[in-house]
Image (cartoon, rainbow, N blue to C red; front, top):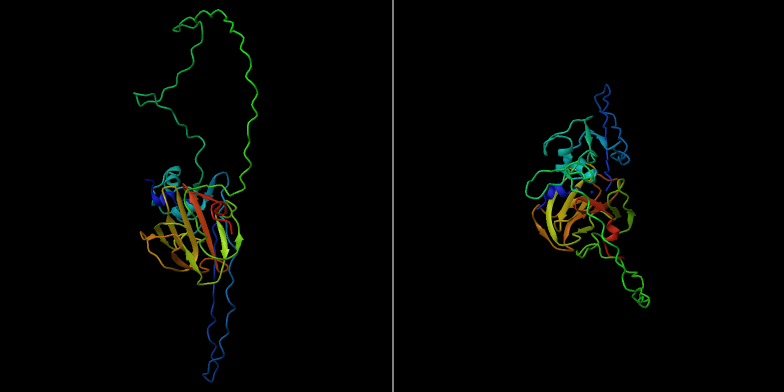
Length: 288
């Protein structure tokens, strides 16, 4: 079975919220009384930062992890480590270059049955040594005339206007609210659904919780649920998580409270990943 964390290669554009606050020290006059303390303005949230790769190479930033970079570029952590000759749990350093796409010079040879070794055999040319002479051509055979079958006009069924079934999983919307950001890989690897803080975040289908934490930069409090060997879902920016890792959850079960952790506004960032690759959730969720 594919490694769950390896297949979680699987979430939207990575958002980065940076908050900096400062407090000035109180000023004391000669009488010993403290002057009023100035109140610093509320910290502003920096605009989202997007990881970018030039010619398939990404430069590591402060706070990056191998796991987080793999998720950001939709690859497995195991493949990312293999492409860069790193251990799966290796630490990264700022400024380090990482190949985030499979090298194009990787060749695959087809083994010959029974030997286990790859072998390339050129086609023999007639007249060369070590090859048999080409056989004499057969005399032409004239087939008897056969009447042409009557033409049949195929029946074309009317086009199906219903949404195609992309998976056998009955998906459910993870929260109520308006979609404010649509899928746009690699800028956004899922959809953003606006809401109020504390609103219920529900499991989109039956599954098992495989990750709870905030180690993936730009996702805040994150929950990842595995639904099968092919599909996982991710729920980011939660205010509070209501489940634990390895816990079985049912479709529609509350797993978190909507929040704004590592985000610029209260919202749920929701992703569906198929075999580790992000896909458009709007093609899987029921119409509403």
